Length: 206
Image (cartoon, rainbow, N blue to C red; front, side, top):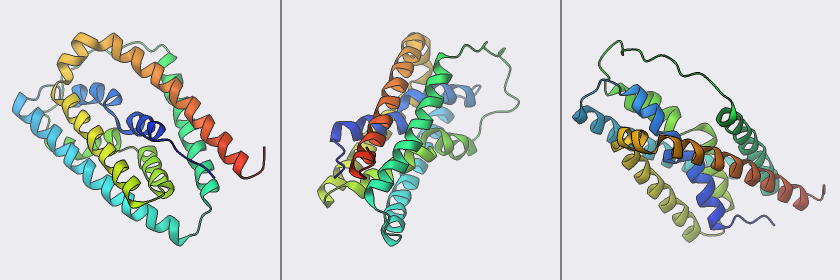
């Protein structure tokens, strides 16, 4: 059988839904907004994200159960998706790209940004939803599912804090955050490969 240690679940969900990929986009899309609007956009984005993840988790697990997809096949599919996303992130982190010249935003940021692009697809990524559905499907009991839910809540709380202090974090820890993102991308590749390997073992292919 395939087993996901809780540490791996925390790591994956942090990589898929966590604050390391949110700070830069948040600073960019809220450029020119006053502090009150920034805070409101951040809180609203987290609320939208929480609702979306709850709906995705409930519907996704139900749909997968109705289609009777074998868990090793589901794990293999998830491993492939997570691996491909990890490769893309790794290449992005290690590829040099000249910074675009700073441009003044065309208009004052509005609350619409909370939904698009912040909640979707910056915070709630398609592969983040996929990871959540897979982990809920593999959870052996309700208690484990509740633990996964609490992990998601904790990560969303970190996301909110990251957005509220995004400009300070980017100014003081910009290089460190870039290095951390690159390291986590490599970890994500390794974990994706591990899931694929374990799935193939269970299926008897290796």
